[in-house]
Image (cartoon, rainbow, N blue to C red; front, side, top):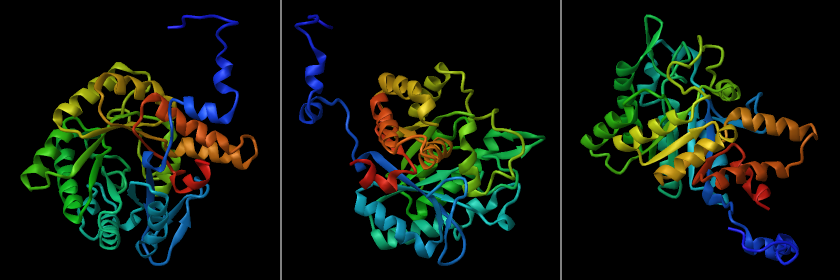
Length: 329
């Protein structure tokens, strides 16, 4: 509540020098606020640039330390693993997701072997990198079937937990999967494995470059609107969050990021649970291409990242996280 008025009240006094702006700032960003996504690829000695995402690469397992070392040096608490599965290994059932020698499993083992628990590992729980139709679940009669998909997701979760994954992140948006995965984890004595639920994941047009990165874009048949959320809806996100918290989610994710700041704030204000934001591939590519074209200056990266903190996000998944030493300056 403002109790004074101009000329006695001059808000610019608290902006006059850098030191006073630092003292009165309401939000800050540090490496502790970030999760670095890492794309994985088959082969040896590979570092392939993702064409639709400037300065983002896919790494073969033997070059994982190159990017993980950087994340550790920067002080990033956790990396998130996403595979580009060989096309020959994809099928309608996504069975490669349950292969203990798949890219994600090999990456978990490699990171745990070298870094122990110095950095956390987050793994995606969904079938879209592994299916020949590009969907997050199983298909029957041209419909994504919910309950049968959950059974596969449970096995995928148990496998990743067994390999050493710290945070399982179901991004599939099947109803009821958090509770069933939590129950299965506890039964198999993986009680300390955390669940980060993509609880408010919208059917967005901003995912294109990511699908290019994991190689699912050309396989996707139709759209994902029957299971991902309608971007016109707000109240629905609160219902999704409430259900996933009740089922055992430790943290929740909002995806995409910048166009959904109101959703982040609404969830944080109502539930007081750790809320993560995903600055998705389309947001990243739009910004990066505009910066590379000199349309925008690089400091807009910091500005957009700060918007997540201002909205109430505890952490941000961002492809810029490996450049925080420059961005946070």
